[in-house]
Length: 337
Image (cartoon, rainbow, N blue to C red; front, side, top):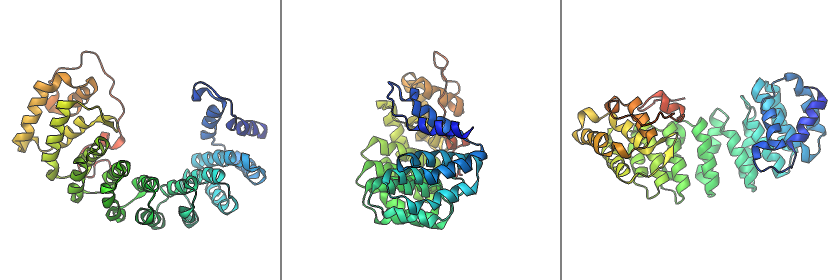
């Protein structure tokens, strides 16, 4: 890419022409081009434009440069982006800069990002929290734990939980558990989702608490946490939930499959030793099988041998792609990073 072509790309990234479908817009297509930048020869021209560009253009320069850094792994790009933190004051430009820092494979000087966690502007604060989710080590995790402890804004908590889902350790768990009882349902759901990534079987009572939540979405996240992390203490709660789902057929889907399928995966571990679970499987395979969706039938026939002989869907069905940890298997520790 020549420098003329680079300037054209930056111009198109800022294009404001409206389209009926966003993916047809000039700016959307230009951003997809920027995401693919991998020519290290563009680093010097972009760095020059980073220093010289006016505020309205620097956000696009940061975006393009950050994708180049992600694709090449050049640590000099991460250093250059971090070096701009003290020079920017506009909240929108800072947002793009922090987002760009978060794309880097290795992020130096984490403490400089931490300083933005107390910024009064949510756009900046949330971008900083997101960037910390891409950082390894105790400084970033400790800063995110402080957000959980001291920030009242539910959105701050949600962003921090999402970041800990990416890089948190057992150190974070004691500060996440209380959020399963937070007043806002979305916080409760995301807390359970994070515990599904970094929690363990000892938290089974916490996952059951989520399954008893009044909000269906929270129940959905809880049953996925149970499938991934819980021990046998959740059997009775999951058995009741699966029976309810089979009777009432809510359509909550998470990670590519329904709660009913997820619950049956968990219960399969205990079917041979639990007569109540065996009876539930028999009931679903006979009485309730006709009302299951074709996708549910496909997953159950493919993944659980008990259902392999149940009638196939009338028409071939392509099973949606599921979360990687679901494909990795079941049980505590399955699909761990």
